[in-house]
Figure 1 (cartoon, rainbow over the protein chains, first blue to last red):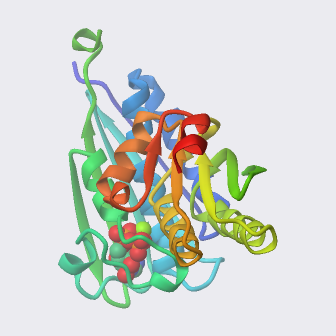
Figure 2: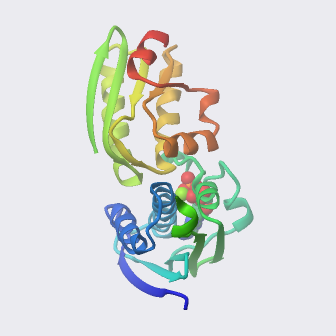
Figure 3: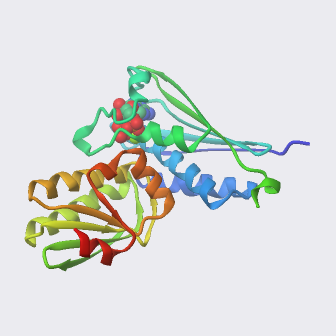
Length: 146
Length: 111
Ligand SMILES: Nc1ncnc2c1ncn2[C@@H]1O[C@H](COP(=O)(O)OP(=O)(O)O)[C@@H](O)[C@H]1O
Ligand SMILES: [Mg+2]
């Protein structure tokens, strides 16, 4: 029998909520008994996606960001969604070091971090409509963890 | 995020206490820049012993300070990183311009 669980929250696009989102996901994922490294990977990826919605998706701080987590067996699927500006060119945006906001000292490494720390990321975005990032990671099972 | 500063000769050591993300980055950046400008600083060391979290916003903070210090003819070092932060810095190719040290003392002796 495969274990399943699900949660969804929404919060305002304020930068204070970046750490809030990390803590929420970390505590939801804790039921899978992740390693310290897995937990750090997941928190960092969530931080990247949520920060992007806040600074790139919206110009204002009172829009809504949606965060969804699903556990299927040993796999965690995290979705971060905004209904903001959308991304012009997703392939360009995903390239290491590409940023549209160098003046904010952004490094352009957000997507690279998400791709490195999660197994797979799926980006759906439409100009003027919004962006949805789905990130998937299979955790080591308790047995082969050791 | 809480910052502690120490100036030794003309090297500024910043001890970061907390989580470095986009939310805390602006304050970190401003506080460090203020110190660099007011204290006749040449080199800069980030002591990451107590940094509990960092995402790619931290890369921007470090590279931004590097640009400033580089103009002053100084060098930037990072010390006491955990493996996770090390991985993020490596990903960004930061060690081409910034020196990595095991301890603060090692950084101070070698910058
Ligand atoms: N949710 C989003 N809404 C609109 N644009 C986005 C979103 N996420 C990412 N982008 C675009 O993709 C680029 C690259 O993102 P990322 O790799 O995280 O780098 P950074 O955040 O440092 O700019 C951003 O500069 C922005 O132009
Ligand atoms: Mg980003």
